[in-house]
Image (cartoon, rainbow, N blue to C red; front, side):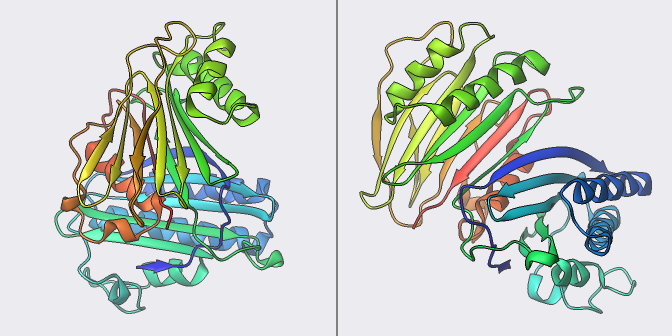
Length: 346
């Protein structure tokens, strides 16, 4: 179930914190963090309170229904405003009918059944996907109502992604960035060598260089990153350049970044061994067809490469963030930093 997401791409998303929701105290921690974030973004006290209510309802649902429930708190910024967004992910039994589930009074546990309905009413942006025996992904975004929520556009984001640090780390060494080109969008995904702050520092420098890079072809961009990252640990990196009018993806990758165009079948894109910043082999660009409506997926080696869209009926119709969260939940590894980016252009 999807409500049109009012966010012109590319917005800048910051993954603020992951919460493992296994007990009521974790719900309280997530609520407080969400309200603090809303306050920092300048929300009114009333709207901040509504964000807290929605996070509480989502967290409570995870405890009641979920197996291995998690909640990610995000800040999304654009030149038209800012949004507090949360992503609730579980491996529970799933919901057979999301349209029914958001109606007040619907319940499977004998409670009042107002949780999802309350979130749906309060949110400015909403998307949810649920599959039997796999679980549910819920995305809800909240803008400042003084400016009409998230103002400026009504089209959904074209490119979205997620990062998650390995267990025991506070920061993630993976990251991604998106920029416009004259013909479409260009996406960079990076995996800093190793883990922790030094890996994160290398990736952040790569993202900075990417956003200011004069080169526009994928090979030229990677060479620019290589020159600029010699003082860091280095990164694995891949660039997908999407041209919707030509129905084409230009791609170049170095290191353990997986990428694929998912049409009638999944077609993998080729990355070469190496480390951007230290060991750059001959970089080669590859071109792939981009059929209308076909998602492009990039992910680090923090995800197993065995995922299959056939196991998720209807998922490709949902927001890129919802797609990314479903893959991260089912293919992500806790022993490594993980990141996944999904691009969808018509």
